[in-house]
Amino acid sequence: MFLCCMKTVKDVFSRYLKELKPLYDEQEANSITTLLLSELTGLNKAKLKAFPETVLPNEQLDQIKEALEKLKTGMPLQYIIGTTEFYGLTFRVNPSVLIPRPETEELVEWIIDTVKESGLAHGSILDIGTGSGCIAIALKKQLPTFKVTAIDISDTALETAKENAALNNVHVDFIKADILNAESIKFLDTCFDIIVSNPPYVTLEDKEQMHVNVTEFEPHTALFVPEHDPLIFYRKITDFASKLLNPGGWLFFEINESLGEETLNIIDNKQFNNKELRKDFRERERMIRAQLSKQ
Image (cartoon, rainbow, N blue to C red; front, side, top):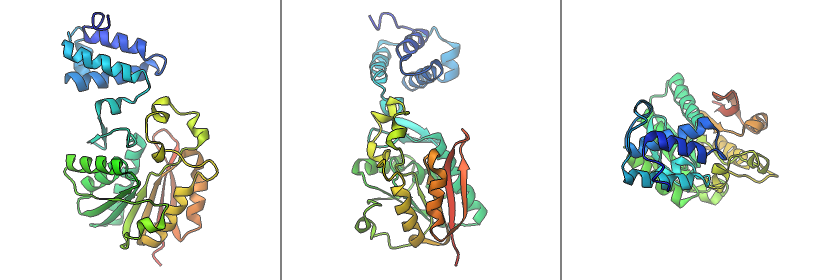
């Protein structure tokens, strides 16, 4: 019945919009359908729109059916197709890593701009909680003269990150480590010019407002923090950065938009200056930059 009523591109859009209505608004459902069809058929958005009567082969219709059943459970499209784009690069993603967000691209852009403004021709970067490796790999791609190291507590995340580095033809040193465990990070005995982290920061209160495709499918260890101590990672990383940044080095964070001032206060208690809280493209306070004193 399913395949009988779907033969053309137009049929697929109609069925997807109807079936995904309980989970997504029309614009988002339309975007999901477009991305999926582009991936499966090789047709770009313009061709899908221009030729809605294109008849799809049964093999593709089978894949479309299978994808729809997964989407109806709330599974993110990126996990279904296995890839996503970040900073103009292709990344493999799976349920062991977070799906890279557009605001994280803005964080990467801010780091690159800061490096250029500082006149640094080379140096070292540490990415804490790398996940898919998107920040570390994008930075290495844009700053090839920099040595980039990335750590994560998850073996499966590190394997995915290594695959993504190979996919994008860059070298990053990926190391298993737990930033909350001092013994685990003793090996980091060299100093860095930049330390960046997009650590867990989602509270239980935040979780109630989040879409099921995040709360039920993306890795909880990379998302959620204790309700009684939501800034635990920021305190640990700031303390770590105050000891392992070179004088004049920069610390960058992606943050919980509702805890911007509180996160800045953590940095205020250390020897940092030039502290800045920045809004993302949605006008939400989502990033922090601070420079370690040169003294």
